[in-house]
Image (cartoon, rainbow, N blue to C red):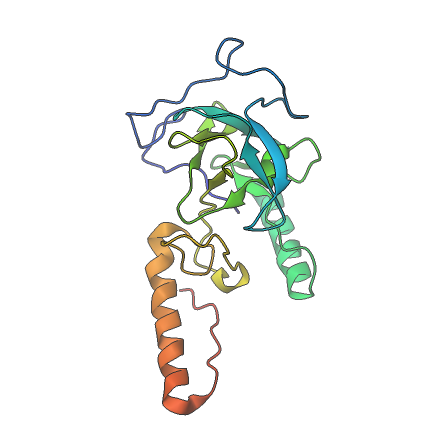
Amino acid sequence: KRSSPPKTAPAGTTANPRSPARALTATSAPRGRTKQGSSWIRPGSSGIHGRGLYARIDIPAGTRVIEYVGEKITKAESNRREERRLLDQRKGGEACVTIFELNQRHDVDGRVARNVARLINHSCRPNCEAETSRGRIWIRSRRAIVAGEELTYDYGYAFKHWSLHPCRCGTNRCVGYIVASAQRWRVRKLLRRARKSAGRGAGPAAVTDQSP
């Protein structure tokens, strides 16, 4: 599942009070809209993975760029769908995660055609972040984004099953896998251990999930 905003941030805010989020209005939003209704972005091929979303024009810091929409489901249903997805992935099927944490009782499954926000790729050094406000999930710019720049945010995946989610963002903070920033040190530690094992002549070391 993709993570919700930090628990320390009240609903409708983020951890950075200097960049308050603002809803798009007729005066703040530029003309020209995508199918979902955001006029800030356009889809295109991505160097990170498949397709992505790009800034159509310059986007100011603190802008609610697009809403992440989809089917509202219970946690139990969310867990069932994730187990099916993992099983399909191990068989070579679809690997994309579209379920987003909403609150303690519900999640949002963004696997719907109208959810253009599902195209936004992960980065270990993102220019956007997720924000939950009044039961809705927004993708909000963390800083000013120039026209033509790809939009990204941190998916914040849990450490469990980290090896199933390779990362191709290429930033200087990337550990090669999509995992929450607070857990990346654990991935680095496992990768160092695997390299040392291979360097002692033990052959290629298998790196596997090692969750508590």
